[in-house]
Image (tube, rainbow, N blue to C red):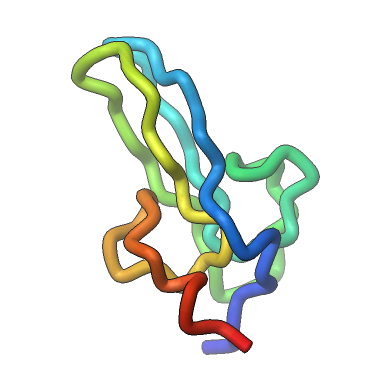
Length: 80
């Protein structure tokens, strides 16, 4: 599997709505970061779905190296 493209070295703060489903971009190529726009087609990557249980601000990973996908775990701090 190839490495993802780093979309940005910081999380994306997103206001999620309770009951809504989101599709996080895992490849880093989407023009609609941090969400999928289908740019992964033809790659080994697939978007990850996230269902919001409550309305609040969440921090979605922008570097695509998080161990807690789709949310940021601070992995961007160790990237070159």
